[in-house]
Image 1: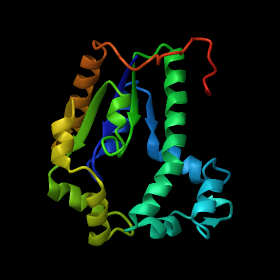
Image 2: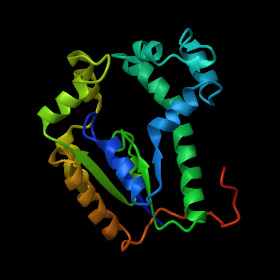
Image 3: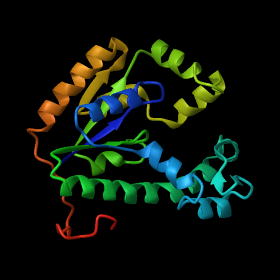
Length: 214
């Protein structure tokens, strides 16, 4: 099974690309969705976050605004949060890949916003970076509720620059060219990907009878 890593800076159209891949029959594991599940009511990360950041839990779930305020502009706090979330997200991704492999899937995709920042490219076979002109990116992001130029700048500062992502990518998709062109580019990538042998799955020590939750 070939594993694709989908990434892109904020506002570049990654969520749209992920939906398109799903419509083409490619299973996609959404890292943001995993984080929402981990930090939602009863989520596996809630107790650890509560211990590390007192006061950010409300009604059994993480108050994302309160947590954001606690880590924004505070690198040590952000590192603590990442140490809680990243191992749990990666465990869920492994379970997703195991399930896909057991279904005989040829190509699967991990949607990872901070793929290069977390060295996630080491866990995938090929990377797809979605990009767009800065003016398009800025307009998309500032149209989001609650977003400000200052927040946008802060987010960009924590992300690998778009030019560096494009340089390191195996495939680059310009979402600024419109949905039709984006879909066409993704379809071409999937056609190529199906001819490429995967290197990371199954992992060493994996046996077909293993539990999908391990």
